Length: 275
Image (cartoon, rainbow, N blue to C red; front, side, top):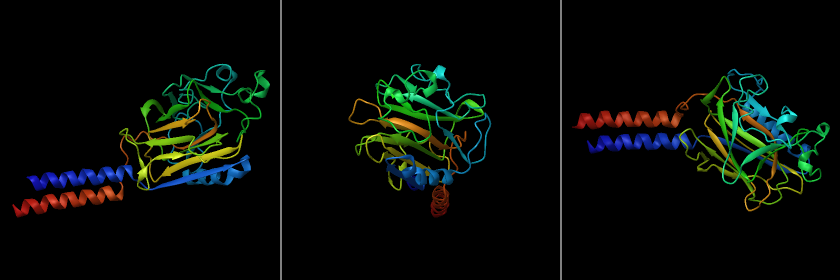
C-alpha cells in the first residue's frame, strides 16, 4: 500500500512539474524608437499567429491586441478607464482581457488624443514615446496591477492564453519593471526551470522596451505587472499583445505528464502483481 501511494505521489509530482515548466520563449528588447523594437515585436506576433478580429466569439489559435486607440474620450484622460472595458460582448471591446488593481493602485488611465482638448501623453509629451500612435496606458495610485483572461464569447468564464507581451516606455533602470506569469491554479509558472518573473529591459529616457513570453499551449491565467519597482511614478505602457484566450479550464497534459501517467500506472500494476 505504501508503494502504491508513493507511485501516485510521484505521478502527481511529475505532472505538476510538467504543468509549471512548459516550454517557453522569451522576447525582450529596448531601443530609443519604435523601429528598434519592431523586429522583436513582429517575431512575438508571428509566434502567436494571425491577428483575430475583436469579436465576441472564439478563434482557434492566433492572437488579439490592444493598442488603446479604440478607447473613446469618455474613458480617456482625464476620465478613468474601466478595467473591464476590453472584456465586452460587443465588437471592438471583445478582447477577453480585464485589468485588476493591486497594491496601492486604485484605477487606470488611458492618455487623451491630441484632438480631445486634453493634453496628450499624460501632459508629458517629451517623457513618453508611443509605439503605435497615439494613446498610452498606465495604472494610477500605484504601480502594480493584474491582467486576467476571459473567454471572449462568454465574458464571465475565466480563460487561458498561450502568450502575453507588452510595450513599455521610459524604462530607464534595470530591475525597475517586471511581469510575473501565473497558471490556472494560481501558482507561479516556470520558464526554462526558473520562476516566471521577468524584468523589462532598460533603455534610454523616453525610450521603448518590449517583454513577451509564449508557451507551447494556453497556460497563462494571470500576469502580475509591476510598472515601477523602487519608484513612485508609473512607467507607461503601449500595445498589449496576447494569444487567443481559451476557456479550457485545464491545459492538455504535456508529453512529460503523459509519460508520468504511464510510469505511475505501470508502477501500480507491477506492485500489485508482486503482492
